[in-house]
Structures are given as structure tokens and as C-alpha cells.
Amino acid sequence: MKIIDALKMLWLGDYIVRAKFDGIETITATHKSGRIVKYLGSGTVWHILPHMKRCNSFMERELSQINKYVRYWHGEYPDAHDRIENQMRTK
Image 1: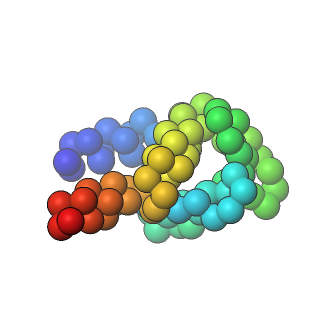
Image 2 (image 1 turned 90 degrees about the vertical axis):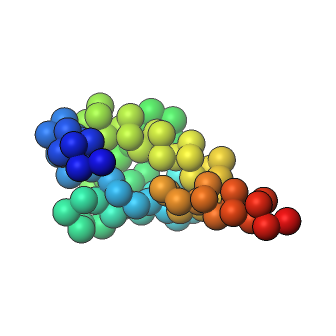
């Protein structure tokens, strides 16, 4: 896993390690460095709040994937699926 983290840092820079859906098309993300950033967008177009600066292509791709994950599993990235799967196992 450390090799993957190192490659992500090299390729993406300060990548997202935790994210949650904050409302209509807003994601609050915690980055590897610990900084917390709010993003507004949907699909493949994302902006950094509050100044609405457009994200680079790599960050937009990551946010798009996180957005799909959060909407599908109805929880926080990256462990919402674990919670749902554990609930299904205990039933």
C-alpha cells in the first residue's frame, strides 16, 4: 500500500484520503497532508471553494470517482461500503 501512496503523491500531489458529501454537489475532502478543502461540482467539472478555481484534470477525475462512490454507498469515502457490507453480514 505504501508504494501506491507514493505513486499517488508523485502523480496527483496532495491526494484525497477521506471525503463526504456535504449537500447539493459539494464534497468536503481531507487530503494526505491533512488540509481540508471544499469542492463544488458534478460529473467531470469541479471547482475549489470559495474562489471557484477550476481543478486540474487529475483532481477532477478523482473527485468524479469519489462523487460516484459517495452517492452509491450513501456515506463517507473510503469506508461507506464496509459499513453496508457489515450490516448485510449481520442480518
